[in-house]
Image (cartoon, rainbow, N blue to C red; front, side, top):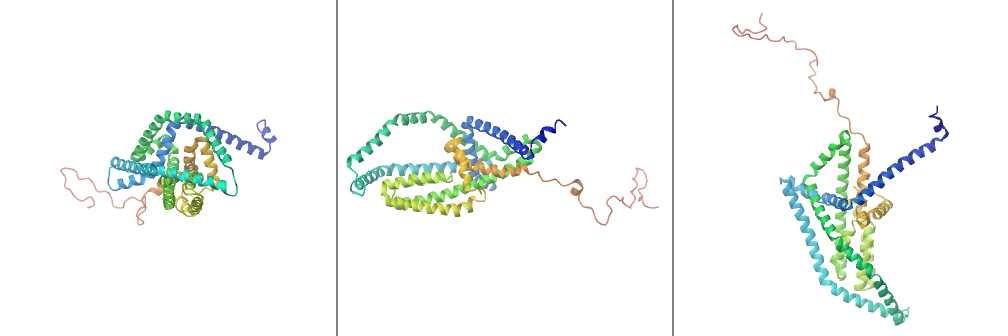
Length: 393
């Protein structure tokens, strides 16, 4: 009676709310310490996360080579070499175009700045030359005051160069072994779950399918986006159109936020190089192309793997950006999609195996299952006696 009395003093609704609150607090504590652990191990966690994304992107090529009869080690090496060749070729193209067109960009920006200055003086604003000079001096003073911070940032970036190089090496190693021995690694991982291994296996395979579709679809959409915007920038005669197209391609991996960042930089370069008219035209084309991407390409290519509302994407990006910065925002959406698809498989019970009676083969319908044979067994033939038939009277 004493154990039931406290529960009777609390309304059922309040008791349920308290139980839910306790569960949420417990889950929140676990997630908090998990995030702290990931933050401490970011040197390892970030390369592993990127390696998983690269593996999901490159595995179709490795699998095709294996199905063609190639050994796994050779298929993996060819896949890695092809990926490195694409990256090196893209970097060389971007670097060559940037070196060739950067002086032209500086000249066009200076010309545009002079035109803007003349318009501020002779236009409807009727500013004085002294006012414009004062504004320029303020900007210069602000840059000078931030010189120490900029220098410290450069020095700190040089200090972490070794860590970045080590992360790249770890990334390549993890990607190589995931492509080569992914199935064996997964089988070894499942052994630690015992009776829960069927559920974990189904959840892991559902998560991997979701991640593969998301990464491959996002790469396809980003490639289309980068190519179209690169053609537009090249057609307008904007300098550095190739680096800007690559920037738009990589920014497309961060939904909603990435395109605003890359589009703003491309618009500023277009404004400084070709003036406000071309900048407005570029913004209009960018908005139209982005709407086509959101309503046509994304639902057709990525929609089967990710069916999140834009509000959910914004919240996931905000949480990922707060916890992990730019890298956290880049991996936040695929992580959320993987968790969303894997949790139902963990909750569902595994399918029941067929019973022993159902597994037995069906017997002939013209014979009872347990009835002994009507023919008497033959008598054994003993050595030294006549071998007569057993049923002869």
